[in-house]
Each structure stands twice: as structure tokens, then as C-alpha cells.
Length: 80
Figure 1 (cartoon, rainbow, N blue to C red):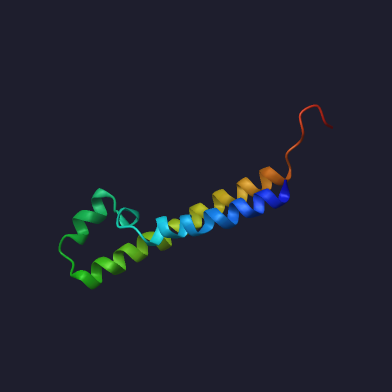
Figure 2: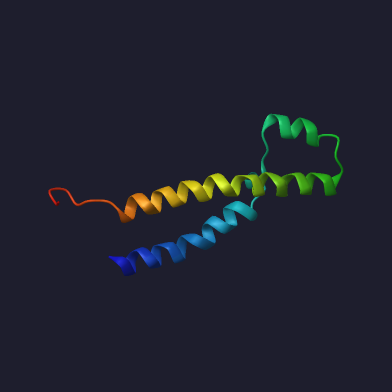
């Protein structure tokens, strides 16, 4: 089971990286960011997109940490 999980993660990691950094849709912004970016040049827009991705990292890391802790401390049904 552990080997299958490792292979699954190794296969999904490049897909997640492509989704985060490869596609234009991954760099979409909220309405407020779009309104403030409307007056920016290309370099400013790129910087704003990078800032949005940087601000996304802590919540994702916290969520993943909670998921890992919950997974490691799970109990089997009927077990003690």
C-alpha cells in the first residue's frame, strides 16, 4: 500500500506543478486583483501573479499538514 501511495504522489506531482505554473488559468485573479492590475504594465502584472501564488502557499501548507497529521493518527474501524 505504501509503495502505491508513493508512485501515485510521484505521478501527480508533475501534474500539480503544471496546473500551478503552466496554464494561464492557474494565474487567474480575483475581481479586486484584476481591477488593480488593469492599470499595470506586463512586469507589474507578472509580479502581482507571483504575489498571489506566494500568498497561496501558507494556507495550502497548513491544510496539507493537518491532512498528514490526521492521516497518520487515524484509527482502523473496530480497532483500539
